[in-house]
Length: 611
Image 1: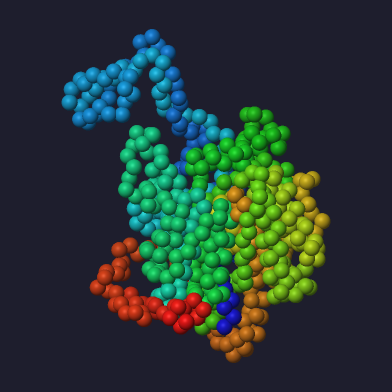
Image 2: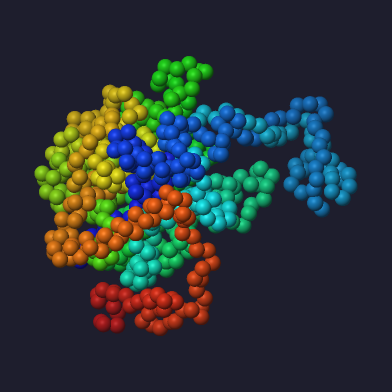
């Protein structure tokens, strides 16, 4: 066995649709695809959105104006601080319980009856009054109009990020085409790992956001908001309610590189033999006023004013929100997106044994900090390290010739002025150092926005689509590259075009705080060649035979989805183990039907009883 991590399934959802079947990727390049594929993707979107027909000229997918279900940018609620200057101050009545607690001690309180009090506020007191304001950002990469992940299962007031996680993982299991119970029967319980998290945590009302603002808005904190708001809760939810996994739980956080941080943990565990199956992902549901207010305050988001200035529009004219995110062009900031992306990895032996569909291989993922920084949010040197190591690993596997001509880089490509300079400089210099000329650069945030911790998942699933259909999504939101973009060794496509370099991809991420990550990904044909060399032709023939059964199962699931006969996998209060279900010895645990070996290999040099 090579202990080579293979991507055998991919699922998720972003503003382009669902990831299984490459539908989200297809939405990005819809006009460049054969008519049959266009029809299938329209049907997939219609099934999600509850619509009989999807007109892509209408703005119901991809980046678009923020819809009412999120918030109204023109009437954003807030509390305005005012000072009372009337000579008489102010008087009001309030309904309270048995105690008049919490009021300013300088305010005079008179009880009117058992439930009401009268409060006299003196002149000069500061109070907060409900008000609205005009938010400077009116655009985001929202999930397709009408798609509500929480309505597909008993979501019980789950934060939106957890709802999206359940959908994404279920989507990946559907793409797997192998019953999850079959997978669990083939490997020990502790050989399954789940690596999923969010960078920001769950910041909507049902999570941390609601907990933090409840009292200041005169409401109570619920018992669910604190626990469900944790950043690692997406992985916890998958273990408890979807996979029933008692294996490794290893989420990581790395700002906008979080997905790749999780992928690195999974790859390392599979390469070491600690796990044989890994469910990897990240989710971010950050289209809410508070989170976007924070990024806008940093000057990171593309504002309505900034977009109008780029296009020479008047103050009363609405910008073209479709073109809000403009990687490597003249731009003014990134566009917030929401996404949940999950991939399933098998080691090579298990993939061949079960006949799994092989999307790609992930030989390695590299992570590096920036070192000394002037600004914690500014870029640094770490991304040179990660890109260089990814290219070095790919050169070791593919050789010089195929490295120079056979790949692409999925750029972080946020759409900020700083990113277009720093990332293009890094990619250009590293391409030159490795002898790569006209290295193809993709930047799919121009379609779906920046989903923060889940962004590299968007990039990875789009890359799988490029290999499946041979079309590179162009950066269609810009008319030309900005003058300060470095390009000597790079090829930026501004239109969708045919793409045949299928050997490898580098998925690149740059995160606030100096969190850099780059993943080396091998294309499906290269991966199969490696497997044939290691396992032999007979093993590959047997794999192809089993793969036909998996292909049939995947097609059947896709048909059910298009017909509306599909719902996410969610198993609440099912299969819960008690102490009586667990058999214990010093060598193993029996967890119901699962056996976990307790023996651990420890280096002899550490063993005091052998000395």
